[in-house]
Length: 531
Image 1 (cartoon, rainbow, N blue to C red):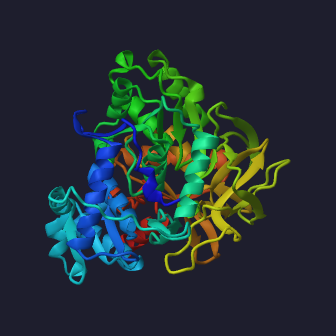
Image 2 (spheres, rainbow, N blue to C red):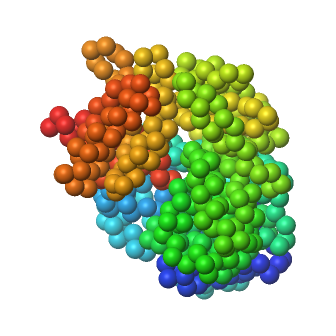
């Protein structure tokens, strides 16, 4: 099945986009989007001379033209490469260099961007040899040829559907080849084993289209299900997190997904809880980071007056290398948590759901895996029909296994994730999770408006890891108080020593989905401290 057939549906469901003020800026039926995609396909062929096998870079702004251009590529066999739209990369110059590195690594032939970026990109020496057009230019030209009768490109399931980048938590983002077969396998598993969509469902998302969860999870999957979808941009969510809840209330949304921090942030910023109605929200999915049982309980209790139900929470696990989803909490299951003992401490950890039936998951012993009674802990290995590969490699079959780089275990048919192998350090023979340390420090420093990053810092004399805590202190006079709290907490809770230093928020490198890039943070710290 070619992925272009997803949009070719004869129903009255809609895709709608809202601005930061909560106003609808665009509303289209599936038929209208399909007609525009067909016209854009004709434009790409006739005006820009693109043909099957070419690679088109799409800077993924949250707008209907991105959706239509993606499908226009599918219609003529052009391979769309999904690129981030995020001007907070550290300024336009740094953003341009990031896009250039991604364009080069994916062998992009042609680039499409929002009009607001066109001048900066076309005048940059980084893109001197690349043809660039804006969404607005293509839309205007396509509007003149609404009678386009472009014949959809036909090919096998292993033909490339699109290129998706990894998050880049440990290295530069890497391009991944996603075949039509891989995309459909993952979409079908999500819709049948996890969300179990019905014709009464309505989705809502603020997730970026350039992230796998926002793209396949909340563009392709809802479209494949044939349900209505409402969107706000990631920047609108950042400016007003509560808008997400407010619009889901008015739109009677039934399905949404986000990292855990988004639920907490929206709850804290929401001043209209008493007027909200979240009783229709049956799937409040969680992905992209660690899940904390206490936070789920807190959100559910706070939002109880809105009709929100605790069992709406559906933690999950996925990664771009698997196209998206690996495990999901089924819609008829409550969130599940168990208490385990790690390094002499009892901790309650939340399941990431059950492994999708078309994956084979195994646990490989790993030195960095903590010892937990009665379970085998190690690196998660995957085999299945929706695994991705590099664009230059042969299209995937389903007979190979990939290491995920994540540490976890299986218990009671549930998958539990303990973190990235790169984020687990060994000090004095004990294993410590850097995200878990950060979480605990943020809790005891909640009175200060700061960011805290825990980093493995090799001691050159002993060649052993030490713990470096970097924090942003808003006021000089708070530094001593913060240091004392952190040192005491690390000593009392973990029995180890740490070094504390201070950084500027601009030194905190993150991926397109908001995850910390510790290697870049440490590199920037070393550059500054050795100047």
